[in-house]
Length: 106
Image 1 (cartoon, helix red, strand yellow):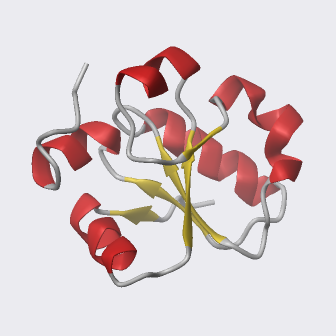
Image 2: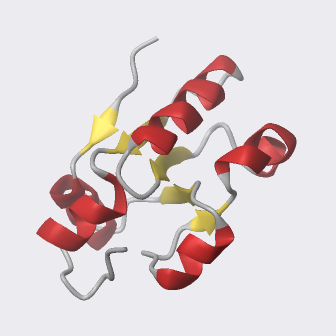
């Protein structure tokens, strides 16, 4: 399966225009406390137990620090029937570099 990705700028534009996207932050809780863009936190390690909290009909964008965990989250969700799921390419670091420099990188 290929992993669909969205660029930080496109995500910002879609959020600004009011698209109903769920940002799924798959980083660990301590990382989320350092820096976040308002996503729903389910750490990647907890996703197998908690994915039923998510609505498979909703469009979901996985967010991590730099991208790899987001890819794993998308692959997992795809295997469990989620069709409208993508990864934020470059993760929160890409967001901090290209959209909002106030978002802390770590």
